[in-house]
Image (cartoon, rainbow, N blue to C red; front, side, top):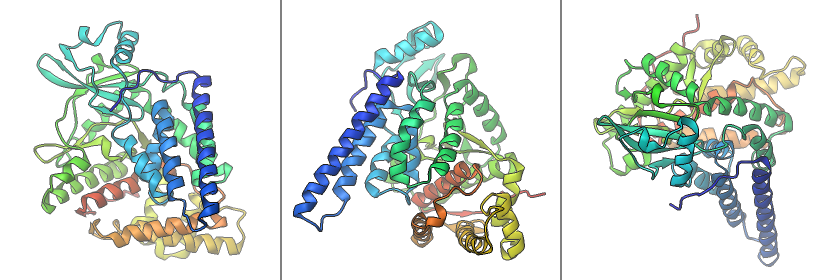
Amino acid sequence: MKEQKSIPVTKVERSAKFVKTGFQIGGNYIKHYSKKLFNPEMDREQLNEDNATDIYKSLSELKGSALKIAQMLSMDKNILPKSYVDKFTQSQYNAPPLSGPLIVRTFTKNFGKTPENIYDSFNLTSTNAASIGQVHQAKLNGQKLAVKIQYPGVGDSISSDLKLVKPFAFRLLGMSEKELNIYIKEVEERLLEETDYELEVKRSIEFSEACKNLDNVVFPKYYPELSGKRIISMDWIDGLHLKEFLKTNPSQELKNKIGQALWDFYNFQQHELKAVHADPHPGNFLITPDEKLGVIDFGCIKEMPLDFYIPFFSLISTDVIRDKAKTIDAFRKLDMIHTDDTEAQIEFYYKSYKEMIELFAKPYINTSFDFSKNEFFEKLYEYGEKISKMPEFKQARGVKHFIYVNRTNFGLYTILHELKATVKTDTFKPRLN
């Protein structure tokens, strides 16, 4: 892949990039409707393909929060046309990498030394480039290391970038402004944490220690003395990303084993730690040669306060959902039903959310679940499609914690579906006392 020699860093440069992309998208619409004059039956597939290509190219050059939004949207498969999902999925694995001179400059700025003066050897060609940073291989005292380097300007441009992303998000998501602002605010808070590499090293050590006794889950060792605000050094873990792993045609037994490790990793955190690794895209995991799940990124952590955790998990793991009054009470605590709703609105949202919860909770109300079945996911996507067209859901509902907790669980479901894994779902249960 062609290396990127510079990143637009200033607000003016980044704004200009968005404006240029906006003009390209406008041109795509003009081309589409010009062709439609001669062919009224033509669908929007080519238009979506052209727009997705132009938007992804722009976001991948900007890096940072702009590209992170694309990565997040690629996981929400029920809210975007397939062209966007296919294109944005690239941000999980292979955004254009930065050139060698930019990498050396980042090291010099952070450590006052070049990589060659810190490690015994350092490969200037990255092995993996994503939204916030890219990874290089290094060696020190005979130990192979992974060195993650944050793109220049990423941490400083989050707020301004998200304002620039809003017009695209309006068009793609169809949210109300209030709802979009809640979404953007929560994303901004998590991204600010994600660009704080000193915080990430601290959390990585804490979470890998807390999860060290889970079966078939492994973590790298982190080196705070070789890390800083924009650089993280950790042990290199050999392994395959999910797509590469599936190409090896693994046995169903092995896919179930990896799926079980993934399920346990997430549900241990949710129910024992009340905080969870909230970035469940496949680029953050490796399947190692000895058939274990390697977790290589703790940049995004979502803490769950008890006033969210208890009503939410009581709905999906107890008989609360069978009691209408208790269910409505939980919906009120979660701001899914508002205090000024009419009786008709209460009944509408009660039925709609009850349908959603019962569907979402299917893996939790069984002792095991087969994630290979397409019917479950088709129903999830159908439900998402249905409510996205309802005017009643254009207003913001639900506390902000839903944004990342839903993303986490749907991301987990999606990876398990790609694995076609059957897992025991009663290994770590909600703790509601």
